[in-house]
Structure formats: C-alpha cells, structure tokens
Image 1 (cartoon, rainbow, N blue to C red):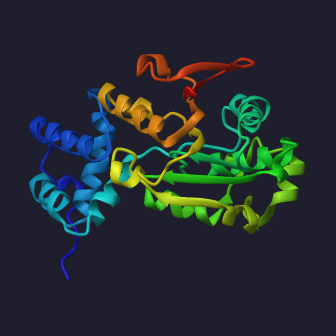
Image 2: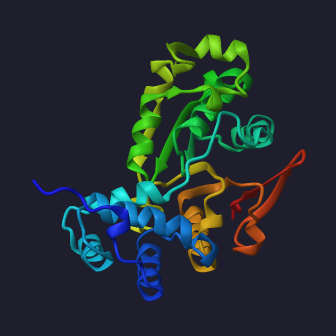
Length: 286
C-alpha cells in the first residue's frame, strides 16, 4: 500500500491553475474567493490533493471534475466553508422575530395555522435551534401554530454535527442558565446535548442554494434567515440567490440578512421593513 505524498512534494499551484480552480468552485457553489483569500484556499486545496493521493493539481482537478460520485467535491466544499457560529448570535434579529415578524404573519394568515422558517446556511445548528428556543420561550402564540423549521447547509460534515445537537462552551456562552438547564443535558468535558424533541423537530438537509433543482422544494416559506453567506458571493450570485428567496417565500414573507449585508445593493424586489432597530426585508403581498 503506497503512502500519501507529503505536502511539500506537491508542485506549487500556478496562477492559471488557481484561477481555473476558483472559476470551477464558483460555478459549482457560488462561492467567490478574491485574491486576498489565496493563501486560505491554496492551503486547503493542497491538503485535499495530498489526502486523495494525487501527485499534483492537474491530477486532482481531473478527479474533482469527473468523479461520478461527487464525493471529493463534497469533501472539498466541507473544508472550504466557514462555520463560525454560536447560540443567539445577532440576537436583535431574534427579538424582531418574536416581537415583529411572527405577530405580523399571525395577523395576516387567516386560512391556516402553519408557519415555515428556513435557516440557510444552518452550519452546526446553533441558528435553527436558537429560533426554536426563542419561539418556545418568548412567543405567547407558539402553541396555537404549526411551526415548521427547516435548516440546510452545503457542508455534509457540519450538518451531521447539527443533527447530533452536541455543543461546547463557546457555542453556549450566550445561553441563559435557565434555558441551558431546561433544554440541555451535560455530556462531559463542558459539552451539552440539546433535548431530543428539539433535535427531531428541525428538518436538516444538504442543499446547495445555487442549484435550483435542490431549492425547488423550498416553497411557501414565511421567514428566511440567511446571515453572513452572501458576503462570499459575487454580485451575480447574490442577485440569483435573492431571486430564489423571492420565489421560495409566501407573499408577505421576510428575509433576515447579516449585519454587514444590505438587500438594497443586490435587488429592489423586497421592501425594507423595520421592527425596532432591526431592518429586515419583506416580499410584497401583491
């Protein structure tokens, strides 16, 4: 059995090869890596070249493009994505959810009692679990509604972690003690597992949002949380994603973006809506 090559035995990736790789990744995922990310990208790319036993970029790129299973492309995507998150991150939007968006939707929905929320990308699960906890703890009408929380990510490994529902001290640093005690069980070494009822109530799925075939099943969504993803896209991919969100939402539905993202720079099809100091974006009802 041959041993894997050493990283220092891999020939340097040329500028042409790097550009070719970035163009391929962009077409597959919508992720756009600018020049100042080159070291970050190349380091992870060389690691995958080594782990697949490829001798150089050319061999690896052939594998990446033509492997029938797509297994290596998924492994590459997993190492290229950033999954920095924690419970109740940017909590002002969760307050807007409870005090603004949900009451507005409840008032306008007269035919049914179902609300659909989509967290994308959901990373290791802190965001969709935070949404569920906020609704359970702070929305008085929660018991009167059928609430469906769907969560998706392009990273298969991080999705497995989200489904497992085990979190460390960093993720839980902003969780109030009473919430921790009520919904989490200690698992040793500072880790806690969220209760099975919450784990099982959220629909986690592997989705590439630039692939329309995969996003077609997301329809009649009432609220989309898509925070700090579009900063990795270029203008074209951002507009296409925003248009996909528009199609996925029910009339009157809302989109929440990250604090450094602005819908006005991407599209004019949504209406800005402010709840307190929180700005979200609403699909017109007409």
